[in-house]
Length: 112
Image (cartoon, rainbow, N blue to C red; front, side, top):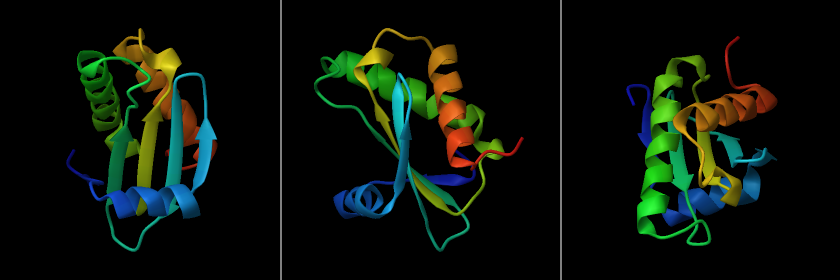
């Protein structure tokens, strides 16, 4: 991810959850909050309810790759937390990518 950093600290996730705005679709939930830096900070969360560690890591990789491929389309200056829903468990990269773009459009943080 050239233009983004990872969101790692628990307090940063909590801050986005409490003060941010969220939209959801069938596969993902996206919270966003403006930050004061020139980069996006992206955090991905996949619950144990989704499946075992293999399934969770696969889903995390799919979400990260989908964001990476569309990173230049996202406006900068946001903390973004993406949460996988149970429906995303069996989906492929194309489905996850389209769900991510859909949520970006709902938040109006995607160009085009």
